Amino acid sequence: MNIYIYDSFLNQKKYERILAQIETRITDLGLNGKIARLSVMNNINEVVSRETKNKVKTIIAVGNDQTVNKIVNAMIDCQVPLGIIPIGKENNNIAQALGIDFEEAACEILSARRITKIDVGLANNTYFLLQATIVNQNTTLEISQNYSIEIADKGETQIINLLSPNINLPIKTRINPQDGLLELFIKTKATKNIFNQAPGYSILQIKKVLIKNTKFPVVLDNITNISSPVEISLLKQKLSVIVGRNRNF
Image (cartoon, rainbow, N blue to C red; front, side):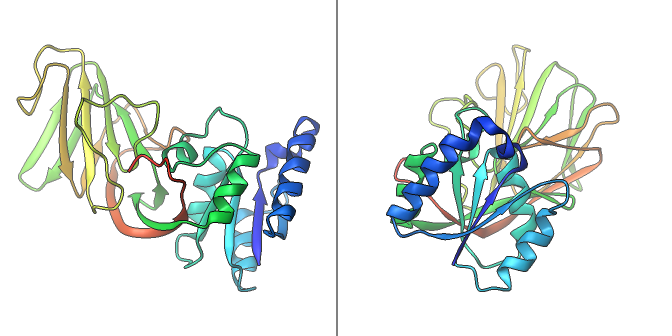
């Protein structure tokens, strides 16, 4: 059985038509399953725990990046694959990175059931798929006991697991969410960089980093704020996910 978890924002009347179209397409493709609608009274952890006890075949996140992030954090220890049906083109970077089309077209990708395993980022006790981001000013990055970076220049630091479509990396930089490595990407407005690469940015592959900044939080997947200090690491090929042909890895 499939379980379709609808985020709470889809309870608005304006989404009724597109949800009806999706449900019709799901039925046509033989992908019927149970629908669970999130609300103030319906906790995501309870929903996932309850449904995985019922031998669910696939957990499908219906919504946006925030929906996916919540469900991943609730199902991380399950062996059940994750599917995604993104609603709307805004705030659906995770789906785009995985090559998943929007709304009804996503049902075709679910039907093809192309499953792969990807790495999952861990920031303290919270999981993320795309990246962790923090402003550069006052940030210290401890990469090992003997190696740390203090950043004074304006800009932004990203620790990337899965490449979001709205992140512009230097040419020939490849992000692979299956290699057990994170990309540490430091963008500055200075003319020099830290690792003697091209002006304006520095990039380095890492497995773990401790971020310290007393003024600004670390932001996960453009959604969740975590106060410093934040230790970021990686769980190699932790999550099974249904992907499309046009994924970016």
